[in-house]
Amino acid sequence: YTLNVYVGMRCITTVGSEGDGELEFKRPLGICYSIYSNALYICERDNNRVQVLNYDLSFDSYIIGLNKPVDVKVSGGELFILDRQSPCFHIFNLERQLIREVISLGEMGCNVRKPVHFCLDPLSNILLTDFLTCEVMIFTKDG
Image (tube, rainbow, N blue to C red; front, side, top):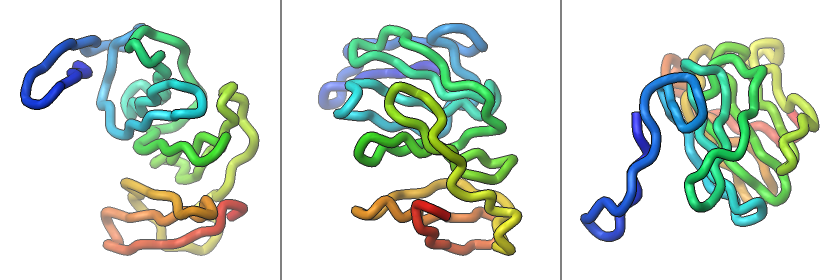
């Protein structure tokens, strides 16, 4: 698994390989860039982490303690991570400190079985898609 950077149709640089170390990836699924922290966040489902890269694609750090993360978004000064196995959202500040778990989706009586992707509206409400139930669900950022 590599991260390729293109300008037009031309690949100008490639970083990474398959594995579990720095700049190594296993099942990278979600990716986002933060203009606030000037960092790139990559969810690695099979490494149970989010790898944080600097703007120049050098390694910065990991966010660990996750359980099959599949998607990541930044809104304001907060980083939202969707954990598929839990299933729940973790919200971190941009210093990568856990602020709270927004939703324990299974405990809310929701029919969330296999969450895949999400997006955030301008108020940071969460719009979630589920692969197995073919549903789109909307949650407030406070759960």
